[in-house]
Image (tube, rainbow, N blue to C red):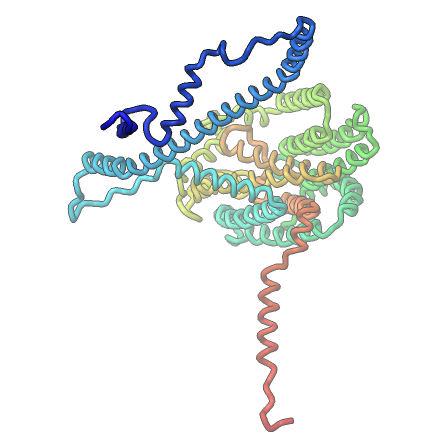
Length: 560
């Protein structure tokens, strides 16, 4: 290489900065950076006042630009925080997906491990002749079934026709079962009296048929007619109860003169109709005073209801029938309770009634002996507790399911009055605990239905009448069954709708007709009955249509 020739460029190496295509630009920038800052521009020679003005204008521009810079910084910070949150959410989603995938991957392993543990602790295999163990119910299945049953039962109770069906079905079953037990319990009594074995059954069946007519009449009668019928019924009952005390007309049975003889075997007990009269008349009286807002005064609440009831009680006690007097007193207190009598007034009347009852019991040796037989297990002195003790014996002989219909031993002269006051004991001996519990359930259903009718109605007369009838039937059943069980003294009252006795059956069935009429009178029940057509009528209509189709004959093809 000579001195006149230019020098050749150096070859490009990867590690050398500033080489290649950008080398000239980089060299110029390096020369600029190497130039001193003092040599870039000369110093300004502006006067001091001009320099001060320029500084003020620059400060103003800087102050004006400060909010914009602040807003920009805040916006940038917000964008940064939003981006950070989005990033965190994204990371969480990714982690969730990864966790779900991990769980899905681990699920088969867990199931396999659970299967292995179950096989490890499983019982040995059952042989060919070994009995199969019963399958255990799964946990939570029984409570769920109970809850479903409770829900269905609650829905059934809340239906509009529940009270209607309970009253009709319960009373019908009690009457039918009572007829069966009257026939079974009265055969020996009829033979001992020289009568046909079915004598008492036929009389009870006739009374039940007549009571069915009265029941249908009570169902079809309007409420206004029931209210109008109360006053003549009360007057007639008082008149007949006065005739009982007339010699030659009144008849004494078992020491109580409370019967009227109509010749032959037909007897009538007017005090049973007095119960129905007190219910209807007292309900109408209280309803009229309730409409006039007079029941807030104690004199309107007690007068004339309590004096009229006292008159009926006096006529009954003249014949010595304290059992019927107890039931009549229970009806009176039931009406006062439904009318909203104050607790102080109610307690005062109750204390007065208890004092009178204690005095009547104290002055009678027969009543004192009955009171002494509560809970007796031995006949006692002079066999004064014979009937109460043999009633317990009859229940004990029955066991769980009884000895069978007609197989009672106590009715063969051992138990007095087996078909009237102590028919519940014969039921327990022949049908056992199952039969007696069935009777109790039927009476409980009847009482519940009566309370429901009295509680849901808006008519004051219906409320008082339904409550009075329910109190009457429930109190009489409690007194009779309590005496048979030895928990109460023997009061001589029959089991309603069940025991033998036409005089007790007729007014009771009329009272059941009242409850059915009141249950049908509810607006919801009336609407439900209007939308239902009896299934029997549907079947008859279907049969009629089929018969009419068969009667229509097709004409021959050649006939015009």
